[in-house]
Length: 438
Image (tube, rainbow, N blue to C red):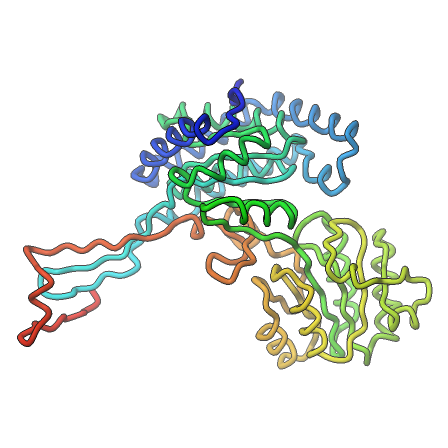
């Protein structure tokens, strides 16, 4: 299998690849739902057929990562064994089962007799997706791109080059076997190609960066292409005065320790001062049993003196590890203020049995996801029923939160008349519009 190409380090050298992707995307844009689903099934089958080669390529990446002392959170995301691969392939087939987001009539309106307006969803065109470490993202993103009728140019981290190359080779084979142009899914492998891609605003319609805060800022500052993404995953869990502490402990452990390197894991635990003396020992015991290192503010350390002292920097840190900062707050408003000051607008949760308090928290916290009595780990496209996600957006404009199929389409207005002209509807004898929804 081969999916890589000679490095294309300038916008001029990369342009033919992007042009080929745009041509392939134009074919996908007009494909029927059945044909797109058939393409996704062919991709899944090809991935199954090349399981041994894909797992071997990933093992080679993992071995190199250990030699290079890759950071633990990135290493955990890098691993793609046979079980994880099969789960991802199942995810591809789940995408095929989702409703087609293309061709939905959002508005159907008579402007006048014989003059009809429609607003219809259509693909964006070509996506450029840049991500670190996680090779399984290749499969999720490729399936979502095909289902939404878009082409995609992928750029994985250097630590996952062999894994991504093997995956994209299989995906291309699947597309070709289904009668589609394999150029619909492309792979870049070098840093120079990333910079070249950011200059291709003529061919690429949306950039989705998935990486560090510094990297996302770099992308935003170095392209004219619209950028969708989130820089940090600084998520919070607030334990209210009216919390059920057994429930709180279970949620806190899941939100921190189930997958600490995920962007939807909590990094700060806030506790209402009225219950701190009772709640902290219970929560700390549960979290430490799960291997979590706890760092506390002065008020927390008055209750638990053995906590590592937390600094101002801790409140703004995404650990992506088994480390959790703890702060005792005066009340709900103090918790909301802390979250809106230090949070990344990703996902924040409250544990309380007081419905009014929960409603106030969910209304006032400025985040893409606000949860009540459940773990922040549910912030995920698959768990939302999107099949998969291309990323999570923390921007205010939509799409926001986990971005699945509906975030990969735009719309166009179609107007059909029969010799109608605008001057009929202007001037002293202007004819009125009917504006009747059909």
